[in-house]
Length: 105
Image (cartoon, rainbow, N blue to C red; front, top):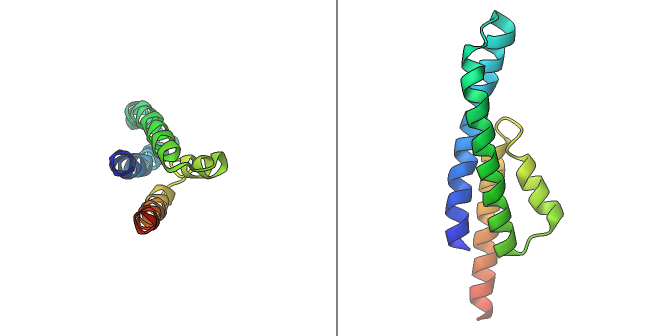
């Protein structure tokens, strides 16, 4: 599971940072009438978010999460600052599950 956790963690941070940059770009676009920054940042964020979804699916299938839980983690990449919180909670959950599995063995 650790091999799936590392890409998820990295993408959660990157998507979270890009979402914050995208929010700034939207303020510049609609508040100041300059769409240049948002035209560059929006597609980059969209592509990275797709990779984030794949990372969530990969980790979720290896960890045998429910679809509802995976969907909640996926939504974490759409709300500013939420991906940072979700990443921390998911990491704690995976480490707890790994410790429990090790204790059983």
